[in-house]
Amino acid sequence: MENFFHFHNDGPELVSTDYWQSEHAAAGFAFLSINAGCFRLLVPSDSPDLSLPDMRSAKMAIITRAPWTEQGRPDALEILFEDNSRNPYCIFIVPEQVERMPLESDRDRVDQPPRWKFAVYTEAGKQFELPVRYRLANGEGIDMGKRNLNKLMRTNYPGGNELLDLLELVSHMRQRPQNTEEFKKLTTIEDRLQLIRTAIVDDIHKKGIDHTSKGIDHISPE
Image: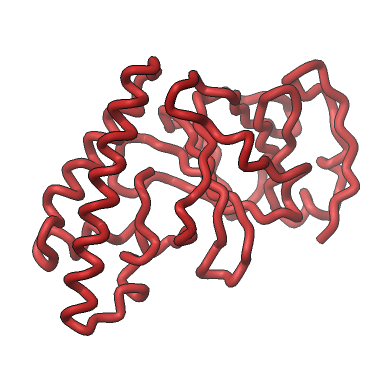
């Protein structure tokens, strides 16, 4: 579905848009508008598939650009609402739902503070803002199967306990604003997570298990 919506902006603030009168909004689809360094997520209030309370409870948003493997889409954005839980709320946005897709050069970098703002809008106006990080996946895609990883990791795979404990540590670290040193520390932990994940996948290969069906193949640090 192509979009031809118009947006009236005041810098990062969304003043008005005709999106709310569109068939797209009437069908309950979210839309992501980007202006002046701010991701503005437009959420129809009566959408049955989108939960404002779950979004509002988050400590920060993490936006990842990668293939959406479950739906066979080569390009998508995962918007994860980090709330320090095992199963944070997340939604997927495809290019037809984005004013313009952010580029590789737009991603956050280790030696820099956050580059973006994030705000959620309904037709009534801006509802809230969250800290945000924008990143690119490591080429393995994004998959809802990874949300169920904790159900099988602790008892079935070597390194599973450490992986889940580090995931929890990362989640705690992302509850608070990060300075440059904290962001570097977080990156080091994420590198360790990737090493553990690789070891787990190798172990699964040796056992002849289809690791894609377990969600392991798409694990990347949140």
